Image (cartoon, rainbow, N blue to C red; front, side, top):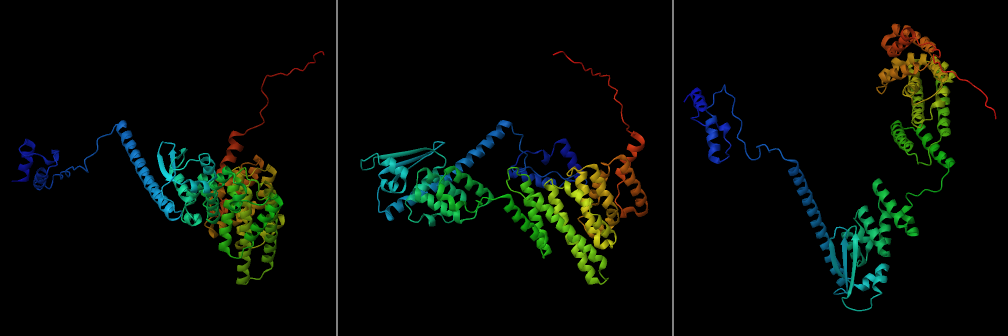
Length: 511
């Protein structure tokens, strides 16, 4: 039969369209497969039959979604409870084994019941002899009853974790608690310590503390350990555990000595890779301290500026040597490396000063480096370009509002170092991929625009003529030029006279 005739018969209803069938029976599926082969190649193929897995799920109501979520939560809770019951059953079996093998005891003479806050109860037959010998709490409670036999009943209610209480009781029957704790995690031992302290199980307390003293802690675990020990107030017995976190009474002088040794060690490191890694590490740690307002001890401003002066002296010495050195490639390479190293060290210190909000004085210090700036202008650019990154660094911080200095200091900074930054800009970009051209241009623009209009004009007209001759070799601060232009020629703010009509009259009242 021709495909056109088949299509016509489908339209007239003589042959059922398989795409309209909702049945998923095997016979209907077979008919669908046979019929689909008769379609014209020009007709689009019918969609595949829907099965239970592919049929779209009807929209669920909010109630149905909440019911399903509640069902999932209930199943998870039930599974968790089953696992807990399995572990408790294992502890109870161990209790029976240890009471008979290690202690030679048969049936228990104390019925101990532990009840959780949600009403879950676990009962076990234990022995007055063991409880009284191991726990001062049970010794006091059980000493009030003299009758023999299984007549003692003790119930502990509203327990945070029934499983931990049961395991603590099992620990009382163990002859080697320290070995028993090997392989446990810190959180589990902290829970055992809390229960041991509550029932005054001294051997359990000692074993838990020995465990905590011997194993490493994560940062989260450390906080939990310190919190629990402070809460339990175990006094002398926890001293060994706290040795790793308790520092000796310290002073700012002693702390400064430590910081000075650390920072000096980084600045003088011989291995460049190790020096970079330690700079990153210390910067991150100091940055974390800057957000901790409760931190008692921090690197002092005097220490940082002492190191800055040391780096500046080294830079002056290196540039002086660069002027006197011969043109041999070996000497030139060594000097370039030394200058770049000292400049990088100073950039690192300035970064720390900015993060600590202590960089205001450094702007004036850097602006006053007339000798260094003079030496800088007399040596080849390939030696000196790293130094200009310090100027760029300060301009970026000023432009972001991270350094607040008077207008005279800002203008002095640019008067001393702006020409050097212009001349070194091309080398700065090409020598280091970490130099962000746009960031420097934005910082420089913002810094210039904080000056008086007259100072802006002097700097921007000078840049205008330089940029026309050098182009991309100079920083593009057209945005600053545009703002200055509008301020100077369009808006033209002038001193606004006081137009208010308010009058003030002063008179003396009789006394």
